[in-house]
Structure formats: structure tokens, C-alpha cells
Length: 321
Image (cartoon, rainbow, N blue to C red):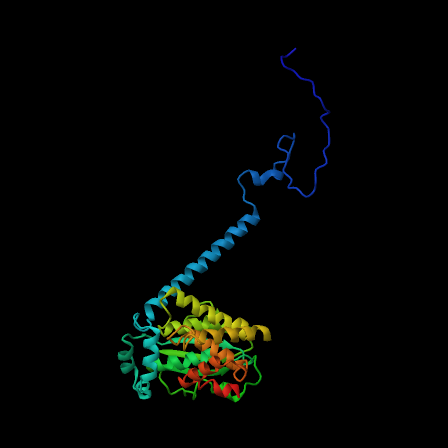
């Protein structure tokens, strides 16, 4: 008799009921198990995992292409001098003679200190039911700094567009204008879109969506964004508050934002202190668009008049009537 032989304590054909909610693993000890049933254990890759890896590779490829596009734009487009702050921008735009903008590309390059290079096209798709007032103000600021070729078009998805929206960027340029005379192309297309979209100069660039994001992009072209992290965060906070709570919120949210604006403007002339910024542009446009001017607190009304006195909001007034 062999040593240490132990008799089985249970029959070999015992059946155990396992719960169906658990993962099932093949019985590697079963005799005569099919090799095809365990093929994934012998070096083969699960098709689901393989599809996930291919999707990850595709996403990484698109990210690398987007990075290359951004790097290319950084080499071909330069904003005004890096040491130009918001107060210098406001002073320059306020005291620059109107005829200085019309003298031609050479004089404007002397004013900027740098050349933008080839014409860069900004194409914006916006819904005429929700005109992006802040972008029209930023367009006026861009026209003070660059030679801008502006045009307005109507997409086939929109049947009719009010006349003020067709002339919101000023008089239309004819086709006789030479594109090489301009530094920026600003094209506004009234289209039936759920969110405002913008593309900048390249067909491969993914669109930037949302009025706030596009406004930040255009404001950076002016080179006036705050360098102080606290001021930059405060500016972004006011922009989001204006667009999401004042423009899209209910009556209680709007009243709360107006109280916050009144308190902030009681301490300083502008939302960021002594400097006019993107926070003032977007917030003022939202207050005007929601029709809260007459019922706004005293500090807010004074601030709105100060914004309108700058002259950049003249393009907004026809759209509010």
C-alpha cells in the first residue's frame, strides 16, 4: 500500500451552485477542457481591450496634432508686447486718434511693435436668437489695435435675420479689398447652433465653444489679460458668473449677481479694481442684454454709464432696441 494515501471524503461528482452575479473563471483542473474556451489565456488579447487601446492611440494622435497646430500658431501669430498691461491698453485705445487705425499696415505695425504676419481668420458661428454682445465689443477693441477685415454672413439654416444683426460689425467690405492689407479676418456667421462656435485660421483646429471661452481667446489677442493669478482668477469668475447666472439664471440668481456687482463696484470703479478688463465687458453686456439696467443698483448704473462712455459699446446699442 502506498504511503500517505487518504481516502476521498466527498464524492468526485459534487455540484456547487455558484451565484450568477460573480465573474466565472474556467476550471483549469477539469480533465478534457477545451483549448478554444481558454484561448485568451494563451497570449491572445481580448477584442474589447484591443479596441480600447486603439481608441486611446487615436486620442493621443489627435492631441499631438492639436499641439502641433498650437505650436505653429504661436510661431506665426504674435500678440502685442508682453509688457503691455490692461491699464496701458485702456489708455492707448482711449487716446489713439481714429485716423491712426486707417493709416495702413505699416503705421499700425509701428504702434504694435510687432507684425502679425499673414492674415489670420477668425470665424464665429452664432445663433441670431442669442447675439454675442461681448464679442461685438471685443471686435471693436480689435479694430482699434489691428487692421481687421470684418464680414457678416447668414447660413442657410436661418431663414431671416434682423437688419441690425447684419450690420453689427460695421459697414460691409466689398470684394475689392485686398486681403494682404489686413492682419485679422473677423467673420461672423448667423447660424442655427446650440452653442457659439469659433475657429481660428486653420481647418484642422477643433472649434472653441461658448461665448465665455471665445471672449477669453479674443481678449488674449489684445495682450491685456492680467498676469497676477489672483486677478486672472477673479476675472474668470466674473465672466462665468455673468454668463451662467446673470444671462441664463432665474430672477433670484440675477438679483444675487446684481447685489454682488453693486458691492464690488462700491469699492472700485471696475470689477478688477482700477483696470477695465474682460470681466467688465462680459458682465456689462449681460446686464444690458437681460434688460436689468433700469432696476440695477446705483453703483451698477454708474458703472454701465462708464462702460458706455468708453465708446466700445456703441455697436451693442442698436441690438438692444
